[in-house]
Image (cartoon, rainbow, N blue to C red; front, side, top):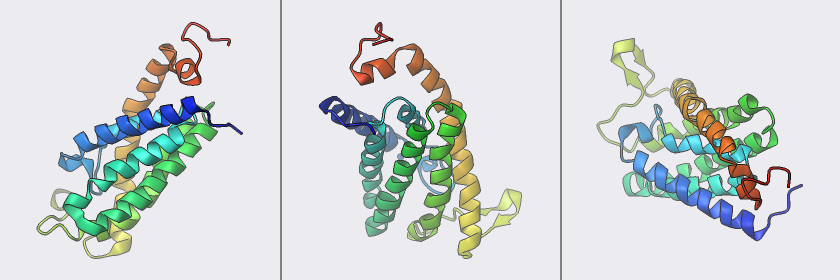
Length: 196
């Protein structure tokens, strides 16, 4: 069991702030929310492979960023604050737990978000008049109105978006952070002191 030190609390705070800031930038585009979403900030979930401080950091960062959605969705945004943050918490915990097997570790954020987020999105998105997120005429897809259909559609689309961002951007980021010695810096050791 890892005991949290003051350094871990500080690291969690920095991770939360960076995640929230990146998410707020992405939320300004239509690809930042909805059943088809590519939140570039989700690439940061790989930091959970480097430090357990990322678990509360990503949870808090997600809660802060999703709270911004209250300006667009009103009280329904609380669904995203609570359940989206819990999905991030589960995904980060999984990533830390399986950090030695990177491909498996990164499946945590992908699967957690793919299963949790689409469950509440139909309720949240129903408040946006004039937008139909569950109809893709070019592909002949129309699952509007049927919760199970919207949920399954969301599992596929959120899952694909998460996988693209986490594996496509996050995995190279993780390799870059490893080479830069970030794990040692997060642990309080110098980048040159890899044995220490």
